[in-house]
Length: 203
Length: 292
Image (cartoon, rainbow over all chains, first blue to last red; front, top):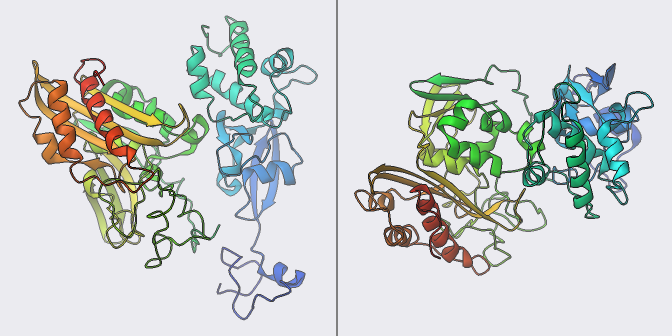
């Protein structure tokens, strides 16, 4: 870490700055504040609404959603891409928001589970989840729903085994897969000749 | 995690490396093309189905939407000890020790390992690229150069920290696929602990060029067994002019596995590899499933 003036510090900040030693009692607040890097402003369109956010470079998209914007639907499950509880749609593609650095997403369009419903009307996938009781504790559910919406848009799941394979990035610790899969197929059947742009799926 | 402490990460996503283009009869895949876009690209599906299958067998849909072609090549091993800074690892700290040698080594290498490291390369896609003899285009301060796929990744030797032959300051710009895609005779066989979203214990990508019932050319790349996608050109050459039969493929598998060594938990991989090799070649030849 070469620079000492705020706003020009190099990354990462967790290297001990020159002249500063890690003390047994830990760092003081002032020391931590002095080691903080400059924040960067990024623009995102979150659930259709433009947002301008100042973030540190290591901030993940998930942390922006949860901590900066208060959108706590996407969950921090494992924080390394196994679980899928953090799945959101970035420019309509299913993405693990915990593995996505927000600073790399400047200008992106992000849809979270909070943005799927149209006012008081649930998204059909959300409604199908309720109807089929497709969860127990529900921690994975926002990711499951966003992933299912993404999967329907991709239009590549045409049979039960394809749904299972293409949804394998969303793990459900309660094992609600059968109901989760059923509601997905039900949702697909309903979309037959239904919503424009959505694929016709055969089950 | 203290596994890596990069000094200054640079986001290269804005570089113009995101295209799949026709190139010298084959394809040039930009380093930033995502795994999803590549696997579902019409030219890849039609001409290089082996590659499409291998990509879709790996990771999850979410990860494939983010993962890039160049990034896939540069994946680090999934050795448990590499990611556990509480245990010694020569890849993290050269010269300290390899915890996997006498540890839990079920997922580790049986070919080309060294006493310093028995880690495996995790990529499914790279195994297909090895069989297709792709070429890696790189660019750095000293200019651009092309690296044949077989020479891109390294065996651990006494420098397990170094995974590839990229030099300091170089980046991958593209991966070139040669004209031949072996769409007629190919197979990608994977054995995993879980049906989906798991790294393969053993996988084999096989491509054949047939002349009637006889083999004109054969290539076989193995994954999950070594520090790089494993090819044995001598074993491949032994198939030339031979009839495509299970016996012939079994003899070939013996040659590939001549130097194989298990480390306890992973010794089963030797027999498993033998069967996966035979199955991949049998399927590539269009003979259905082998008898065992």
